[in-house]
Figure 1: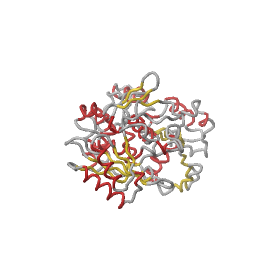
Figure 2: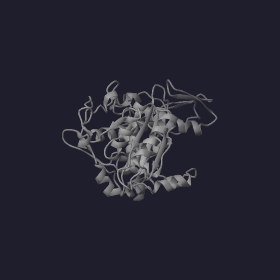
Figure 3: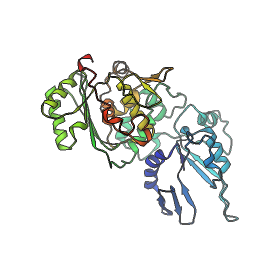
Figure 4: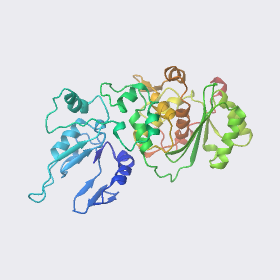
Length: 397
């Protein structure tokens, strides 16, 4: 069973495998990532790891009789051909040798999967031994009606691709977070929270139609997401105070957007002795050893969440249609100097008709967390003072 890398295999494929594991399969050895079956055969969880092994040396000498390529659209075309080369290499007793078999799952993408399979399928030119079976999310009998309804909040382009299975739409190169990363995070089993403190992110409503949103995570597991309409500053402060005491969460692990109305919330909380962290999205990005530069702190925070979703770290145990839309709606651009700039809130609001309140609250929640998979941006020790803003004045923003 092949997927892009081990973190995604471990956090996406393995939980699903456990749910549908057949009786003949043994327990997974998480050192070798193999499961020995009753007849002596093995199921191997095998990361492609192309970024570290572009010559696919790990495949050399691999003796298997078949492959399941999960999300083949995320894998390299050369990996597909390497699988053809290795499938059938494990020779067993005469008369019991199974035919080599390669099964692939995929999402609509404008890459080699489309060129080899879909394009030839719709032209009625797909020849044996290749085969293509069209299927969409709506063909899954286990999908709930609530989940189907939530998908309708996706941007039209994303809905057509991932719900209706429209292969004619190419991926938007400016989209910060693809929908399938968000879906994977929703499906992902919660990971360990050992060594982490609970975090609380607060996006305070700036205008009448905005929502004040609270998001909280323990480790990489988002387990609280709630929105409130029409709250005054003092009521928002009271709500945050209650969360601090009830959850509980340390005040210095609470991050509040202090631009506009949020500044008053921060002042009230600090007056009550809760030394919460204020976030000024327009402030300068934290200087790190990342290969990228960032236009401002907001760009850096959103990019961090993007990478954590891409790496398969975040588990969205709670979600709603607005969060899905927020995360998939944001666009970005990168200039020649590798300076990343996230689309402004005002521009996003013009496109989707509202502010990304839910997405912003989640971004604040994860902003200071660091991971071994993303240590080049928020490495150990560097993230602790990410929101040290003594050199800025809130009034400027």
